Image 1 (cartoon, rainbow, N blue to C red):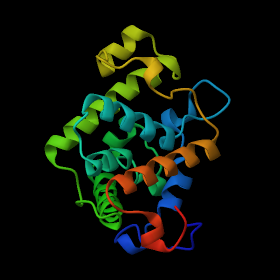
Image 2 (image 1 turned 135 degrees about the horizontal axis):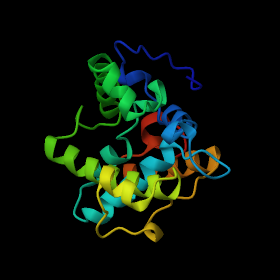
Image 3 (image 1 turned 135 degrees about the vertical axis):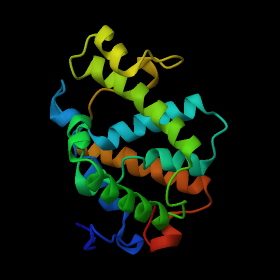
Image 4 (image 1 turned 180 degrees about the vertical axis):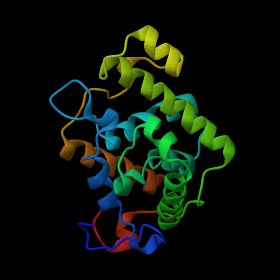
Length: 199
């Protein structure tokens, strides 16, 4: 990692997880295998911000921990990349087990439970699916009808509520870190107290 950390994929340690590495990596991983409109890829970092925004709007009483888990819902992809769903299905259990170990390491590093509860996972997936609808129709060339078949029709969320226009990697990285820091403050934590660095 650029931070100098060495992360063991088979046995990842929370001590080797840094938010700077996560933000940097996710801002440079493209959703939809890069097959999107615009001058920039739609990054996993930006997708994570959109999903967290949707989740927050749909669940106004959610805790700061719930919001942080939502922001980090694709964090393992900073190491393994964003594999498209059909290919994940082909690869199967091996990929999932690596992803779950990475998720646990990331969550434990930031004082969260190793994995979201089943109920929280369902709510995050709902926000993720709403994001996918807008990404599909606005960026990936899907018709509204085609996207509705795959993702359903979003209710209560409109395009103007989310940051869907693809951002440059550095901007997506900056916004991801800003949101992470805001949630850490809401949780009573800060990077300054954890690492000695400025938030």
